[in-house]
Length: 353
Image 1 (tube, helix red, strand yellow):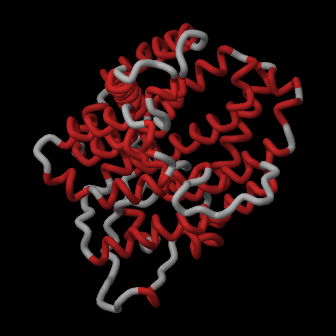
Image 2 (cartoon, rainbow, N blue to C red):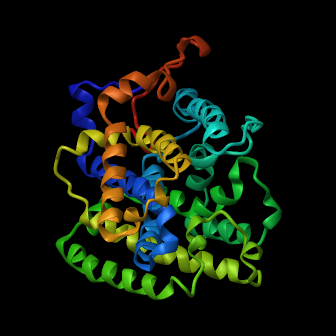
């Protein structure tokens, strides 16, 4: 587990912490908008645009901070305590929670079938373990895109570890592995920030036009082409098209992220807490059918829902919540490893630098 003292604070980059916080807020908002999509074309268009880049941005940053993973004993220990253990804990917790929220009392715990938000931890485990491969091949990004394209041609992949989604999101992780600090400085230049405004405006207009014409589930990256009822060759084509669109929007998103220390910067270290915990709030709210209240489908109600989602996930990223749940999210587990294995403190995670 990483230290959280003044020395650690100095090592953290405010830009990445800010980016992770804003991205997780958008994730929470997106989940809150889901029940509102059918009644509003504008909400659906905004939902489509946000889903095109919020998880890709999160994954790109995860890849960037995974560059140091070399499968050494200390890195494996960190992978187990920071990814594998939280996966087991939250997969179990979500299974029991959804027995109540979804009304499925006989649902069983299945570590091979990620439930709800836990797919990201399963995917991160796969991506991190394959990092030495991507650092060794000559053209990692084209190869990763090829793997993602082939996944869309394979509806029989199945649900084990949600591999369909892990493989289709893989290029964003590999892109993060390939990036260097100067690439992030490049997208933060003022010219790029200015250009990001019309790009996002254009994306919103295109999304509004595409709502009745396109299945935005392509941005979820969890189904093969045949599952959409289209010819198989659509899969590789959409893989490249969606990757191109999402990468541009990720660059525009990062261009707007402030690089200075702000009140949100400290929250960036707790984004995985916010990510995994806000799902319980969303599931509980859906159980009580909040979306059946007509007011929430009005513009003011939709704005209120967005603000509540942002406030909830912000609270879940705070230090008190992290201290209470650190035993599950960042367990030391020294008893399970040889004493010679020590943590390096070099960040490889999406929530810790």
